[in-house]
Image (tube, rainbow, N blue to C red; front, side, top):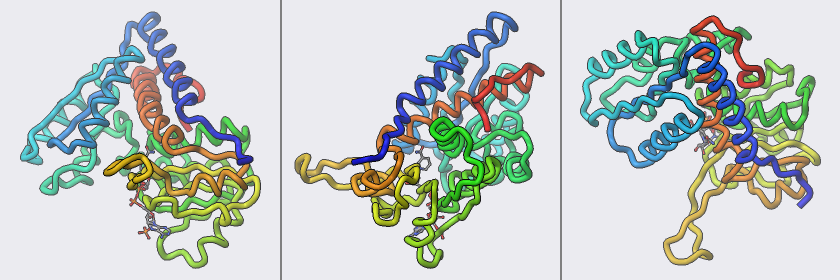
Length: 300
Ligand code: NAP
């Protein structure tokens, strides 16, 4: 293996430390405590784990955490009424509605009812438009985490060839916008892309956000490229015992690490950065809401 491992777990700890420092200053100098409200509808086990983890980390950096757990059959009107209340609550600086929502709720409608200034997930159409036009916005957490790691590793990304595999609204598209904003030459690949291996081979930076276990092998990667693996896939691991599983990314780690210059592991790469960036977005939103200088290095 030749690639440098980009340690997302350690990097996320430094982001959280920065956030905690800023929260402490906001409390001391301005008597303001940033607050994050997380809304969970239903009892999806994975969502429950995420929400618990978000709440715990929010409190750990000194912010207020407000958890709203609603029944699976909550009506759209009741959910919108709660969001309206949170939009108007000055103690709440960030609002996150955990996705996916139960099928009877219109996700777009719900997300677009959040005050864009409190939309710490960055999914509101106003924030999508602001990001797309290079204006100050709330930036989606996972791609923001990827950008932070890339900037930390390379310094300037200007002029680099970047290929983003995946065009989802939550990862692929905002990732591409962020890389473009940092003056990369960006290609967005997807399931209809012709000759994907050749496309990937051109890239100085590869961001894989596909959701297919180990789809990108090392022989697609240009020597020395930086590989950011967003994928989180659970696969069978009979070598660990009967019925056991393990997590892998969208990139075949061993073969890619043999040619890449740097690579994020799964787990321990992009994953931990996502919640750290949620906390960063909340402190940024709080500063903006109060007309205060926002912390440096915590947004795009
Ligand atoms: P998604 O909405 O399912 O999008 C997947 C994208 O991959 C689509 O654009 C799809 O293309 C493309 N794709 C599928 N098969 C392909 C193929 N054979 N070749 C090229 N492109 C292909 O997924 P997502 O929400 O963006 O998530 C992607 C992965 O990231 C998942 O593993 C997810 O668990 C993980 N994730 C991790 C974090 C984190 O915190 N680390 C956060 C979010 C997501 P089409 O558009 O043409 O269908």
